[in-house]
Image 1: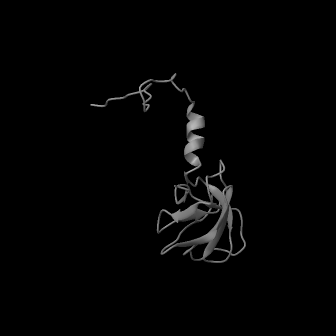
Image 2: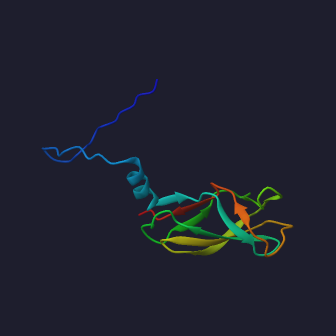
Image 3: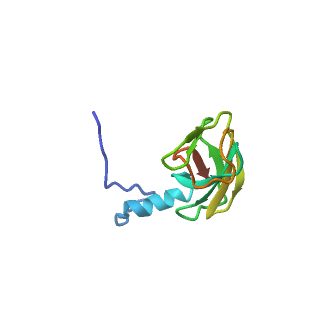
Length: 130
């Protein structure tokens, strides 16, 4: 069985305040200040083994985030053509609170300086946790 609770507000103290209604979009933006999983983003093959990606954060993050590659076999492709899966992948790059530039290595056989290259979703996280 599934049990759902909504419309509850817990407070410390002996008296309560009015219920704070907030839309889902505002709540999502507050969460994205601390953690994001990178959606699809574009880049280019820097050389035959590495792609470079520029990603603009949907909201300004709390601090400069830590980037984490979520898979050891990331996937990238040129639109509607060839796809590439890296093995033993690594990542490097720079980030600010508003955007990230990162490089994913471990691919083989790509054509250097070819764009656009799509870096598939859900392969990189950005964390500005406390």
